Image 1 (cartoon, rainbow, N blue to C red):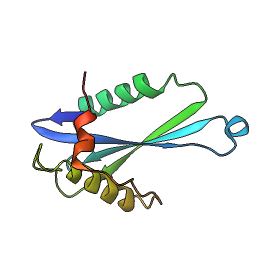
Image 2 (tube, rainbow, N blue to C red; image 1 turned 120 degrees about the vertical axis):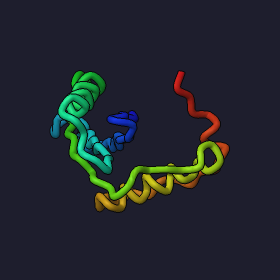
Image 3 (spheres, one colour; image 1 turned 180 degrees about the vertical axis):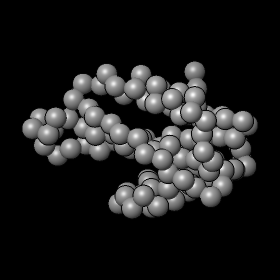
Image 4 (spheres, helix red, strand yellow; image 1 turned 90 degrees about the vertical axis):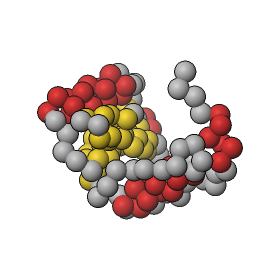
Length: 117
């Protein structure tokens, strides 16, 4: 999700944690991070919360929480010529969060299959 607030953009990073003991722990947990380099207006923040609740609030056996991940500057890349910049940026965010996760190898053509339909 990309949220524009006064021509600035914030993003959501969604990480799903599959709990090893699915049944006794009550399901999976999804961590949502609002990645932003500015403070959102109250209305925009409420819109993000509403979006998260609409998307994740009704998932069976799943809980979620949202934190804000402040970054120094807005993510900018050479679309569509350097799509791997997205992977590098997300890996950097994951590292900032101290999460032990390495994204799989990708090629530029892997982004050709993405759709917003």
